[in-house]
Image 1 (cartoon, rainbow, N blue to C red):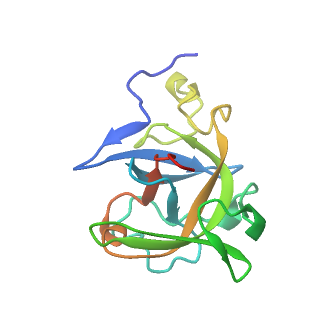
Image 2: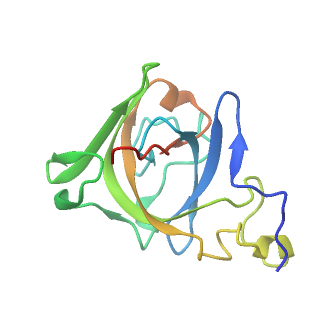
Length: 172
């Protein structure tokens, strides 16, 4: 198969880098997230986050949890980054510039990359049969625990990316 070397999973924005995550099965949904080396939690708006900046500011709509066969919320005994509250793993983060978010911890099948602007799933195009195409090859995915955001403030409302992907796992 032909691998399109022009397609890379990491993109440079203004003052930040972002990546496309493809979340859920059988049809993955794109969630574009900024890459944050200072935090260790990945989170983006999900079903039920009514004031999360979608449509007006974000590139993608909220993640529709009911459309994924592999989505599930974490039980209290499986909390990774948060704590149990009302029989749900709750997690929140505040950032130095004043932005914050609240979420509940979930898990789903996720993989990164793919053509950001391309129509996915065009199997007549050899480039679309590459491992960078999330609809043609799921061998590069993993079960990811992440925060389904239920509320966001400040930059998380107005940024182009949908959410954040924490890369700092030190001390975890």
